Image (tube, rainbow, N blue to C red; front, side, top):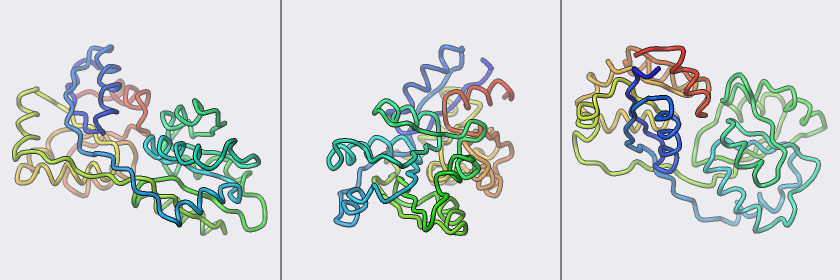
Amino acid sequence: MTAWRLLLTRPAEECEPLAAALAERGIHSASLPLLAIEPLPETPEQRSLMLDLDRYKAVIVVSKPAARIGLERLDQYWPQPPINQTWFAVGAATADILEAYGLSVITPVQSEDSEGVLALPQLDEALQEADPRVLILRGEGGRETMAETLRERGVQVDYLELYRRVMPDYPQNTLTDCLVAERLNGVMVSSGQSFAHLRTLAGLAWPVLCTVPLLVPSERVAEQARAAGIQRVITCHGASTAAVLAALEEHHP
């Protein structure tokens, strides 16, 4: 495992704890955040969704920023969270934030992604009533497969979009200069959007990036990477530190 030298591309506040966990296991890393989180201003429609939170049998939180910002909104309107609804988190780290607030949260164990949540028997149980409703807390765009699948099951799905992800501004060649200077032999992305930003930042050097192993959180992002020409894609089956470490243990540079 210690042979890995990784480029971390998560938002800045998430790179630091992952880098520390990697360092404990002797893995060198460098950070180049490809996503910055910008909270969205609250609209009347968003306020209405939060005020109607008790109408939903299930609330699905797709990311750590969605959990943090969503709980801030929850605090504004609900002295106590509504009862008789089930909360789900796509990943363990997201669940940790919700549980620290006092919520009981269910998250998939084997596959921390949309498919993992959709396969949970607890989700089916939560939606065993006439005209069930689900609220998905997310950023701007994303997780369309989850909503489409639920709607095919006869579920009404609403989105509460809480933030947008933007690409930080870097000078030309920042990415390739970092790979060379730090002697990196792997790149890690946390979402399809961060992969898209990686490709944009690489520019004309994209053929070089295609030869570097890429670690991704899900098979959906893996398919994007393969289609874009990445020669070696490693799926971590989740974005948690545990999922990343397990993938690094299984695979070698």
